[in-house]
Length: 340
Ligand code: BDR
Ligand code: CA
Image 1 (cartoon, rainbow, N blue to C red):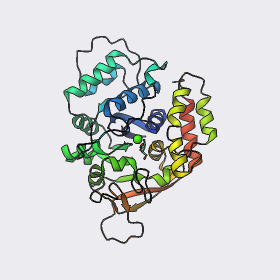
Image 2: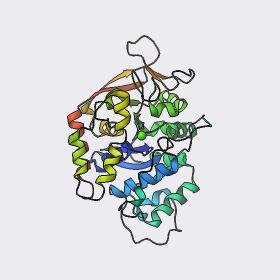
Image 3: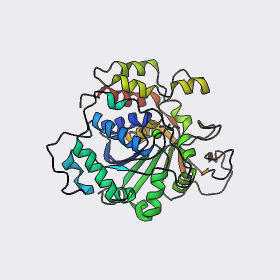
């Protein structure tokens, strides 16, 4: 079992990544943090809370008095399986950042069990009392085992965590990120979204000394949402199949137009799958640098594929995944929705 912290910007595929994390017996979830990326951090936090509720990470409790003990370690009393930490609202250096406002899917209008008021208040109070890096640091440091960080959005939170608490790297086993590309990107020609939003943060994390595992676009583009997968989500016998189908197919028009792909990929759960079962993956250690200067290739992850530099190798790049087994894991999790 891998003790894991998930940093995310839900989102679309992030929601399925949270589902896989919640469902997998190989992962002990220590906490979730949100970051500005696909959504602003407030929307991302709302969608993370709704996902937690939907995937059995929030339990009903009788607790009514929320004023007593708003401390990090008290999350279970509020019915939470793990703390939810509200992270950075903008990248490290960019002042003019605006999250790509994908619609919020009308999640509020769905028949998703309401998030108890006490849970919302606990999350809000906890986060207004302490800086998010302190909450992350305390959870990670106080854990009995080293922690794996799974990062599914821009790397702002993780960079700030290491900047504010440099010794945190002693308590982290590795960081597995969905992000980057060996070749072409998906924002502009050459950069991948998560890295492009905050290249300075990514550059910092890649050279932090932490073991970094990067799940790039080349790999996630093999995890295709075929009609069989779409059908499995559509035929879920509960209220959530509509909204989950919409989330699942969100990128379909973009991938059809830009990449001529009939079936869109499901990015973020691939990084979770690496933590669930690394034997499904082939990874190689490379020197990877993030371009932070050039306006044309800002946010590019430059992988020294042919070992041309003597600079120290710093990133395990995941190049291949057993796609069939990946979908076995994912479908198992999808079918469990509503049955938890
Ligand atoms: C990444 O960007 C986001 O839109 C997805 O959630 C994923 O993390 C893919 O480039
Ligand atoms: Ca994401």
